[in-house]
Image: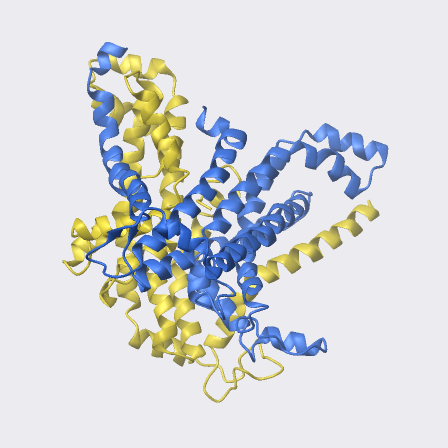
Length: 281
Length: 290
C-alpha cells in the first residue's frame, strides 16, 4: 500500500509537469498582458507575477480593436456552419442508412472520397469558385458570410456520423410511424431526428470548435477588417501593435476567453473519450 | 419499405449535401488537376496550356525539394512523438489517482484554443530576449534564435504542433485503454510484473490498432500545417521552416502563380490520399462500415 502511494506521487509529479507545459504559454501571455509601462517585460529573471500590475493594456486594446465585432462575426460564421452541417448531414445520412436506391454505392464512396481531399490542396479553385459565385465581402457583408460558411457547410465526417446514428435506430420505430400515416419527411423530422439528438449534439459541438478556430480560409477570402473573425483579428494584432507585446498579449487573451468558457461548460463532451476522434485533426 | 419511400426521396435527401460537395469538393478537385497544366506566370488573365511543364519545373526546383524535405521532417519528428508521448500520459491518467479530470482539462486546453493564439503565445516564449532563452542561459548555454536561426526555426514550429496535439491524442488513447480487459493487469500484478513490462506486454499489443490510427491521423495533419508557420515565421528564415501548404499558399495567393501552385497541390493530394487510404481501409473500417 505504501509502495502504491509512493508510485502515485511520481505519477502526480509527471502529470503536473505536463499540465504546466500545457498551460504555461497562456500563463506567460496573461502575465505579460498585466504588466505596466514601468516594468521591463524582457527583464531577466522574468517575473511571472507582474510588479507594475495594470489593466491598462486590456482597456487600451479594447478601445483600438473591435473585439465585439470579431466575436459577432465568428458567432455568425460558426453558428451558420453548425446549422448547415446539422441539416445537411442528417438529411444525407438518412437515405444512406435506411433506403435502398440506385447509385447508393456511388454516393457512399463519393462522400467517403472527400475525406481524402484536404481543403489545403483544393483551396485555390475553391477560392476561384467563391469569387465567381460573388460570395465575397467586396460584394456585401451577407455574401461574405455565405462565402466563409459554404465550403464547410457539410463534411463526410458529419454525414457518416449521422448515418451511424440512424443505423442504430430499430426499424420498428419507422414502421410504426408509417402505419400511422406519416410521410417520409414527417418520419424523418418527427420520429428519427429526436432520436439522434446525442449525435447531433456531438456534431454541433465539434463543428463549432472547428469553425471557430478556422484561420486559413478566412485569411484568404476576407478583405474588410469589419468582417474579420477572431483568429484573423488576433493575427492582425501583430501588425497593428508591431512590437507592443503587452497589447498583443492582452488582445490574444481577450479573444480566447469565449472559447475557454465554451470548453469548460462542454468539457465532458471533449474529455470523456466517448467521442474519440470527433475533432478534425 | 422501398415502395413507401418513393422513387425520389433518397435523391432529394442527398441533394443539398451533394450540391455543396460537388461545388466545393469535386469541381475544385478536378480544377486543381487542370490548373496544374497551365502557366499563369506571364499573365493571370491569359493562361497558357503547357502540359507537364509545371511538374518538370517543380521537380527541378531546389526550393521545392527543400519544402518537401521540411514537410517530411515535420512528419518524422511530430508523428512519433504524437504517437508515443500521449499514450504514456494516457496510461498515467488511467491509474486510479485523484485529480484526473483537472489534469485532462489542463492538458486538453491547447487543443481547444485557436492555433493563432497558440502561435502568438509561443512567438513570445521564443523571443530573442524571451523567457525560454532565459532558461537556456541559466543552464549555461548561449541564447538560441528559436525562430530566427535557420537551424532551429522548423523545430520550434514543430514543437507548437506537438504541444497542441498531445491532449487530443491522449483522449483517443484513454478511450482505447478502457477496452483493455482488467483481468490481464491483475494477472500481471500476481506475477509481480513491474509497470514497464505490464504495459509493454498487455497495453501496447492490445491498443496497437489505435497507435496505428494515431500515427496516420497525425501524419495527415502534419502534412497540412499552415497557421503555425504563417503566424510565427512565414516560412523563413531562408525557407528553413517552409512546408508544402504554406508554399502553395504563398505561390497561389501572393505570387498568383496558379499553375505552379496547383502542381504542388496535386503532389500534396497524392501524398494525403495515400495516407488516407491506409487510414480508411486499415483502421477506420468500422467507423464507415465498409
